[in-house]
Image 1 (cartoon, one colour):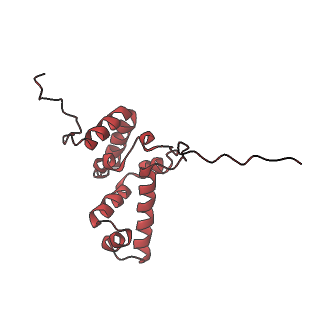
Image 2 (tube, rainbow, N blue to C red; image 1 turned 180 degrees about the vertical axis):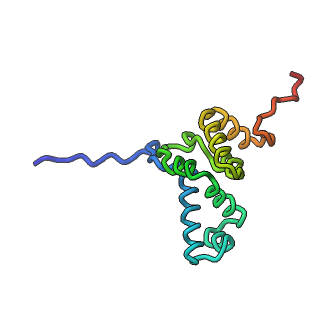
Length: 146
């Protein structure tokens, strides 16, 4: 009789690849839009109550639908990642893009963000530390005499 060893348990270090957060947020915006069109919910306030978030957050998520269709397709086609640090794009960076009415300008901005992933990382790190100005620059240290 042959004995089989039990399958080893997955370690905590084993991670499962999942869609980037920006992809999931855009998919959520598409779903929310459908609920609004169907009349399942009346407005952003209903969505906010159901989701346990503010109306402002719903507005931020829904603004992703203002992106050019090509950009939305690219976001929805982003590959799965195994950790948040692998995600190059985030919703906050795309807010400025979504505010532009001209889709050609949006595409130019999108391409610029895609070409400069190190800039995305610099902005993300600086924002986490609360040190990014309105232009997205991390100011140099002015204290300490250097």
